[in-house]
Image 1 (cartoon, helix red, strand yellow):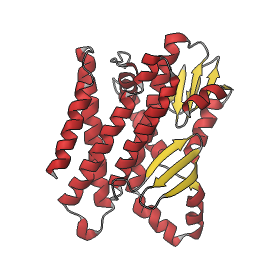
Image 2: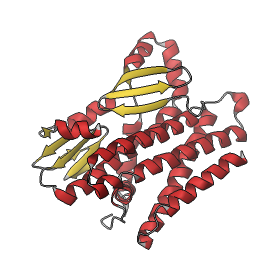
Image 3: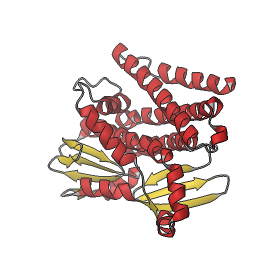
Length: 293
């Protein structure tokens, strides 16, 4: 167990020193975000592992095992989110690919920890309207319709122009509009919804890349809410056992709780002096402190 906590400490040190060379306010916020991502996802992994373990396994050792695995997953997700700045810095939206791949690896580890499963029991990746789940130990690939992405596609695509080129460059649906975008969590010049990004056509040059990077970070925030599904994993299995219809449906559709959880959390943050989700996205994507929130 000491080895695992030593590994987490190394991750934490790397995440904090990664902010060197920036303003003191930025470094402080980045360090706080690093600790939050490690600690919060550690708790998700620890609590989830207790919920999904047998009664004889409900003990502190089980919690610690889930905690350190969730914390490692949180560290990896943090690194993935940090890479979103390369979109802005290099002015290349193709960097969205490594951002999403690394973030998905971290989220997969968090979900496995919270479901009390092996470290790499399952690795997932969301691509357009598809959810890919790969099970390394079984060498099995499951492909399902990612239902939440349909919602994001409808919200962002309404009245906007689809851009196939930018979509293929990033693996994220891209739309452009002469007007702003509206959704259940607000309105603005750009929006990132599940697997889709929409931006005003007036955003060009540096503003385009900085805004696009921020919206990629928002999409990664959505994927990070994977803990909700893990908390109801037992209920999911119970329904699959008792309902043939639900079991058959689950083979082709991926139903997630990320959306409702993110929506509630975002609405709560909108009532505060500084919206955590907006501040976090700007810190990761643009490497600065968002003074607007």
